[in-house]
Length: 137
Image (cartoon, rainbow, N blue to C red; front, side, top):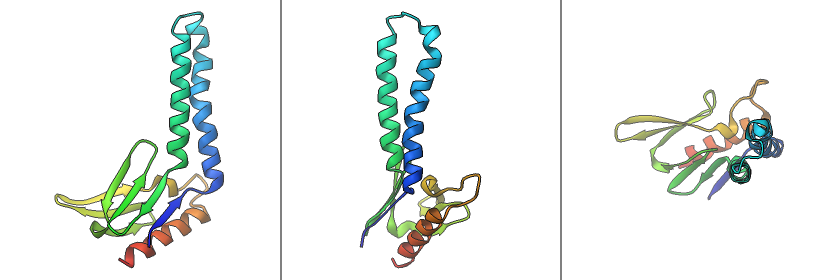
């Protein structure tokens, strides 16, 4: 049975807000430097594209498990890992440990990482669900 795990709803909202604040904040701060430059519109479009990309990627951070592949979706890239290669879920390092031809690999699950206050309940439960799913294979 497939398994889909994502960040908690409040984490997703925070990611989306930050995704829009960062590029547009940089654009506003660079305003005095840009002035009336013809680059103003292309930079605004670039900030918009960055904001949309980061908010979509950030909201989709998580893990998708299928019978043959586990996909770890992060902010920048998605890693596909053969399910049969996964050795264990390491909750202390919020990572998947898996075997590849040249040795063991570690793929971090940033969607379920710790914050300054430690690991929240949703992340712990998600890592437990993932560990149960992996061990049932």
